[in-house]
Amino acid sequence: MHPAFSVIFLTTFIGVGQGLFLALFTSESYAAVKLLPLQSHQFYAMGSAVSLIFLGLGLLASFFHLGHPERAWRAAAMWRTSWLSREVIVLPIVMGLVFVYGMSHFYGWELKTFGLKTPVQGDLTLLVGALGTVATFGLFVCTGMIYACIRFLQEWANPLTVINYILLGGASGFVLATALASIMAPALVQFFGVWSIIITALAFVFRLASLIRNAGLRSKSSVQSAIGVSHNKIVQKSPGMMGGSFNTREYFHGAPMWLFRSVKWIFLLLVFPLPIMLISIGMAQASTLLLMLAFVVQYLGLIPERWFFFAQANHPQNIYYQTIG
Amino acid sequence: MTQLALVIDLNVCVGCHACVTSCKEWNTSGPAGFMSDDNPYDKDPTGTFFNRVQTFEVGQYPDTETVHFPKSCLHCEDPPCVPVCPTGASYKREEDGIVLVDYDKCIGCKYCSWACPYGAREIDEHQKVMKKCTLCVDRIYDQSLPESERKPACVLACPTSARLFGDIHDPRSEASIAIREEGGYQLMPEWGTKPANHYLRRRKTRIKIHEDELIRADNPLKKEQRGPSKPVTEPTLDDSTSW
Image (cartoon, rainbow over all chains, first blue to last red; front, side):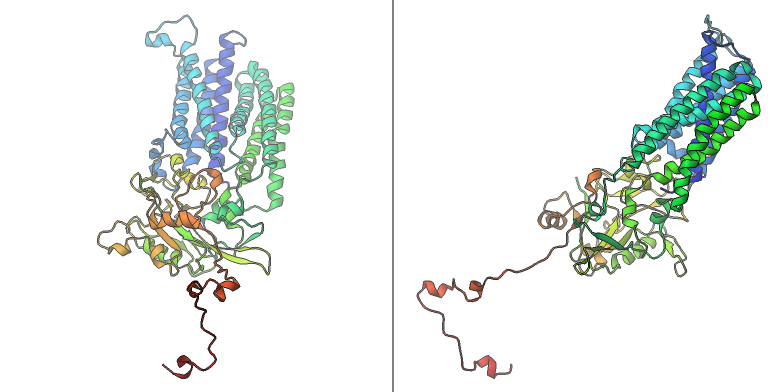
């Protein structure tokens, strides 16, 4: 497939936003059972704002993918059948919940503000945070299933696609949370840092698994099944046009093979070992700069990672466009 | 249930592209608006088409055969492009099974084109909506046309009648009979899309004549115990007369 930068930025940006929100709420729920020191409301409010910025940037990027962005509202219609439609609905829900979560922290709202008394401290933020967590995971599943549900794109049609969206988004969000904590909540740096390393390592395992799986894939379709002629040797002489068409532009990445191959090694380096190294050193030296660098490096790695994810998918229609002649 | 479809006979398709040009001509002039082109008379011409004829060479030289392969939307009975559409712009008509795009609802996200294994959908680069074969839905029901012309433009244009049009759920339609009797098949059956359009294979027609058929060993005159007349040696009327 031809990787569209609008979709690359959409999926990576919302991944960061979702991961960061999950990180914030994880630390808050640990604090609620007194496993971690409770942080100032400002930290959570600030973190939510950063998460919202990333979610908003992703939403903005998605509009550049559309031919008719002014009709985007229509995309909420077919949620019964379309994962894309479900994503269109869940993304604003996540943004709304993160917004309410941040506001509740900023103004110190609790349920008693609205006349409901509970013995739990910070009950409103915990409630909104829990709802937000469910919605966030829902959004990850929607995003992943958009690709995983197309059964004949064999590189995508696998649970690993959804798992990788969750883990890669989670990893980048936790790394960003580590960097933010080093500025605003130093007590949480170790907590976020260790989780970042664990999630990044897990993401490495599952991304590697999908790379290995895809390397061994055999296409179910062949030129024989595509045109229905059973002969071992069939050569295309003409695709039915002289110049290109949508079919030759949309479904081929168009990059030279050396670039395609090196992108894989670039992202494998930038997304996994380098950030883990930078976080470890950053935690040891309590260096905000290194932790920030870890996030930037990982995010810069996620762009080629997503590019490769799209480019690697080999659409069966490409069988019909093997020769330009 | 009606399922309109095309049956394309690869045995008689000569690859003349008349279906391609007539399709473009009809559909670019239709009420749904033009199908845009870029650089049509220049380097790297490109444009939106609903139908294309591709050419494949089967076999190893010198035992090769050229197969011309017209390719358009197959109007699948279980179309994977329809459920993925987030706006409902892509839909399959209940009444005749034609898969259509509502150009006023399409947001141009291209997701349906990813979900079509055949690459049958093309985005119009200027109108920014997804387009595909409509089976000439604007002409097959047009009461102002004589009934014989209420067929897709490609079918009418085909000089070798390689394209049959009809309801494949009606066992007595021309299309159904062709599928049944000539071995019609579907493209990429492995994906379970159940394409409505069918193709007919290349087939060789050979007559097998045995020698005894030539000498008429079973000549019925034998039964009547009258031998066939002797070969004629003198000139006959045909030989001597010019008609």
